Image 1 (cartoon, one colour):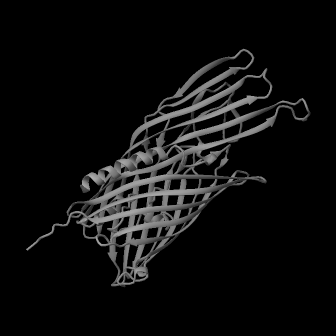
Image 2 (image 1 turned 180 degrees about the vertical axis):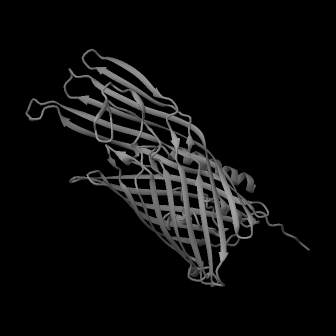
Image 3 (image 1 turned 90 degrees about the vertical axis):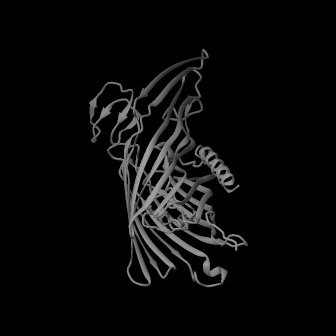
Length: 445
């Protein structure tokens, strides 16, 4: 019965996560690169700003560092799933617009496979694409009653996810290593339509699309050492291998003749157009008296050496000088992506885990993070991202289970750059860590 229940929950969560990738963001910045990157955090660490690399606890599923799986208790089956809802304020000049979204985020699980060996599997998002906006301009500089205008409409949707299986092994006392093998998949469709109020002028539409089915490999290591009777230090590191995804970028250009109700289409493609970057993470946490956890992470993604499929008119150097004046088709262009750096500081506090008072077992969490952009917008750096989060881990106690936790957190995210759209997002995250002793053997005299 338990196996059937768990399988049903996982399959349902897999379907919901897959569907959620289509519309879980409305940011115009999601049109660049592979979209808005997910921090891949779960309910337990979203209130800590996504702190993960040095976190080690047998009651959680920390998929961001697979070495942590070896800490899972031999009697435990852990299932963690989460949802979120957000409202975002977009500001450009004196204009403001609000947008709301909600999504099923992730589903992960972990259990002890062998002595000192833990296993985890699940589905998590990698990036999200979803936007719709337009720009209206007059065709003539001097506006008059007879002036015509055109609209440029930009729409896009899609995203990328990974379904993973991972192993964590404590090879020596205090030292653990691990890996995740993921099936990486997703697709996107991005459309630009230029329509004119003058019916004598044709309407131009460009549709960019891609569908990716590949793999992703991530490795992790953790070392845990008791400094004294009150303090335990855990240091960790992760590496994600960068590689080509083996997918083509496609472009269909359509010219609509409004006068004659005819259309003309051309197609172009860029073979082997996408790559995942090399990613490196390092982090450390300090656990004090089994009550207070404080940690810091640094994550790096090397996007700068990855070319990106684009369409342009002329080829120019970094100073704007024309190198080749011939018309360019759809092709890979360098210098569009940037190396990304992210810093995270987080803390988790339990008042008194040995107390019989219920509220003494509640987790109180806080975190901040800062990330640099990984793409350019019209030749300038994209928005920086600053985040502040806080939350609670509420124990769920009943007659048969006192190990599960309801995780609730609130998050404020600011994306800003000079002379670009500014975003302020308020997000509510809700996650359930279902933790039960499935593998206990009972004896009756």
